[in-house]
Length: 278
Image (tube, rainbow, N blue to C red; front, side, top):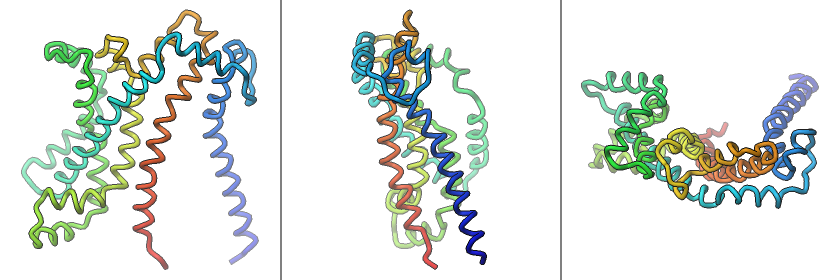
């Protein structure tokens, strides 16, 4: 093997990866820098040097809403919705992948159809239903419907079919293990990388959800963070508040980064556990 040619290709690959990483991180860095600048400075010039308006932007944010109350409200929705979606989607996916029964393909086809239907089409009917059930200004309509995640079920079903040997479940049945016992003790650990991946996506979606909370929640003390931030974006002095908007967005990203750091270790550890030494 040509050692020189290999080193050249490796160097080019590393350079391309560094350029890609810088390109991905640049908007995030720019957001942090703009969080320390005033609206006029942001509009007039581009720079990666932090400004001195961080405290002023902080006070501007809290003039419109309590940022920590918004984060708490968003966590009340995003955490239970993510946990319930991950568990019941995994249970549904396992049932569709591991059991042969009449209507299996029909149910899976229905899930595929619902993946293609925009959820916004049913907002009016959903709001009328919540009104009749007296669930307006409640977090229940934001959590329970999130459990029905056809995209998550589809992904986890494909994951189960590729990663779970049927003989493993058969061996557990021969040993006298019940179906739920097998699911919790055997299937869930195998599905951990897929569940972790979809949990990250689910948490981000629930955390950033804006349209449905804006319709369901009318009381300011129950507003989630995206709805609260909309009041700042919709203010009359939008130009002067640009730095405050960047600051609130930067702070709102922190829980997402923590969730990603928490779940990514399960993805990496599961991949490493399945690695084969040569």
